[in-house]
Amino acid sequence: MIDYLKLYKKFYYLRFVEETISKKYKDGKMRCPTHLSVGQEGISAIFSQLVKKSDYAVSTHRPHTHYLAKGGNLNSMICELYGKENGCSKGKGGSMHLIDERVGFMGSTSILGNNIPIGVGLALSSKIKNKKNITFVFLGDASVEQGSFYESLNFSAVKKLRIIFICENNEFSVYSDLSSRQPKDRKIYKLAKSIGVESGYSNGLNIKDIEIKMKNAINFVNQFNKPYFLEIKTSRWLEHCGPNDDIKLGYRSKTSLEKWKKYDLLKTIKKKLKKKSKNLEQIEKKIEQNILKSFEFAEKSKFPKYESLFKGIYEL
Image (cartoon, rainbow, N blue to C red):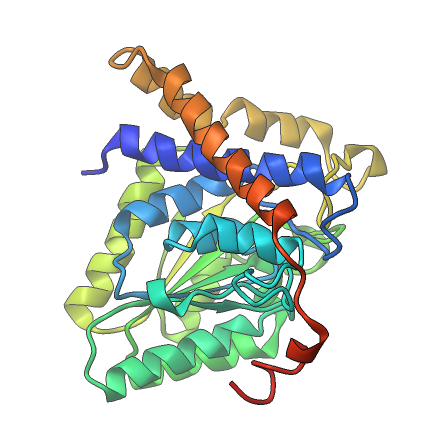
């Protein structure tokens, strides 16, 4: 059973990191495109409580909370956003290309759906080496429209790989909603099952349901040594790329966004904990202080030297 105080701390941490990036991005010191997960962090928070250090994870162009949930170093991530030499990709990858092999976060990619076959390759490697770890592949609803999605799920099913695909369905690909891109009555998790991968679904509005469905996925892989696909509905509260609210653009309903904010999972957990714990504000303040120190560290850190430009790209 998940420790809800521990979950709240991680959830608050992830939310404050993303909100701080949003605020500081406007200073113009982070020069890379940044895709924030404000509103979607609950999935990563629960994932952080269930994943093992020996497991692998790969992510998308929206990787911050996945990286941190897997144990990635905050100083290294923020330095990467500022393009500094002690960033997790040496200041050369930016927001969309994070990596920390020491904790099993094996990378994130900016190309839609490109991380899926990478995750499958990792899972195949684990099988060949007879390792019992699980590979987690994070993807969005738009990745389902890529050929790599079908090929990867088919290969995973045929090879019986220990892999879990977590689809964070926020219903938008940039400005295009799901109904304009995919058949109206088709469910993504049912599509995965039709390819031969066992699947599950959560509406994303209930923290306990997400926990149960994620545990079900892990238990299935551990019991049957086969892949699993989990679709979780969610909502990004800010623009596709950047730090701002974009509701004024008119491509999505203000009513729908307000519904998701009403059911904010972070507030739900806080309300539950307030009955038992009276020092949540102190906990939040300490988390905020530690996070702000990482931003200060990044701003004071050095940029990479010109001589290091090609190191780690064509040779180690």
